[in-house]
Length: 442
Image 1: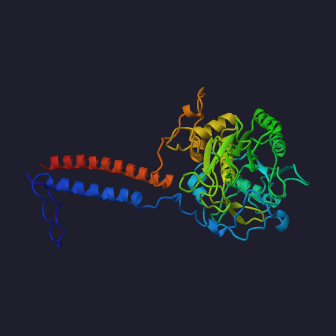
Image 2 (image 1 turned 135 degrees about the vertical axis):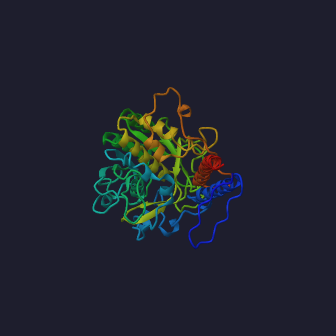
Image 3 (image 1 turned 45 degrees about the vertical axis):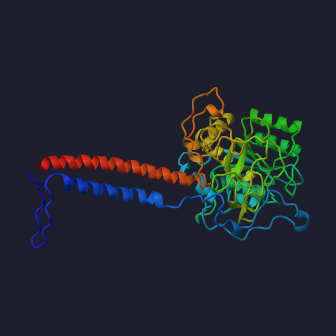
């Protein structure tokens, strides 16, 4: 018996009848499966990967004035001049981390993050400032006044990376836009500090109610007061986050307080996910992301970062100090959702949910991996573990691409694979349907 065909409309040309048997339905099934494959796979395979490869410049960074960790010529040229430019697009680091996906779980509300550095400009906490209504001015430990004066501008930049408000024009936003910033000035007007000043600043942060404290300027050698201040902060429940190297550092060896146990040491990665340089200009390879011999716990974007600085305009800066500020913001998100967590538990959460580098852990360049904002914030409370970070469950390890392309390109390929699985499933269903129809037509 031949397969039946639909009757032709009056006046319309007659469609040819299907051949005898099931070959007609099978050809239609194959055609539909091919169409499904084209629709599902084309977007994944043709979409450009973002962030860009590690050797590609970050978008719009050269358009903004560079801001460094220190200001050596302050005596000759005065304090940092305000920026007259504003970023006109979402910075690559924000695209890379995608904190917006974690904000439904928490935005940092109720969490105070201390920023230990050159101070935070008081105007940033008023009016339309990046930290409007969420800036507390702590002590200035060198010179006169409080921490609301920032000659270098670096402290203001870090504070905006942590908790800057989201702007309607799509410019830079902080990781935890509802967190409160406690500014503690621990440097002179050139941005340099000492172990004693850092020790006083860490104690001030702990006494000021901070749950997280980020150190903007490390020192090359510790002393006993600094070691005791780190222990004091830990006893107070403060998670101390510090860069694993000074921005632009060339010499070998650990820096402090990152060199102390219990401090979360952070290195910088570039747009492609590989270890980044530490220069203020954002040029890759011009500085060490972590000095040889330094301990690294985590990595975060640190190349060509963009944020508000003194005067309200936007600047660009590179180095582990910025990466540490981003990690401190992620810690604030975690605590805003789970305020009962201890500092040690937050640190463990950040390590265990990080993007793994595909190497033996801890990797000397990126530690346990690159911080994952969404996984860290959205994760369910982990059971108590007696093992170290290496025993904690984490995301599937995906080795980096041989050519150094971005982690997102791997995600695109994963999406293509998922599409292929869907095509296979749809094809199988279509074949089964074709067989049923063919069987009913016999």
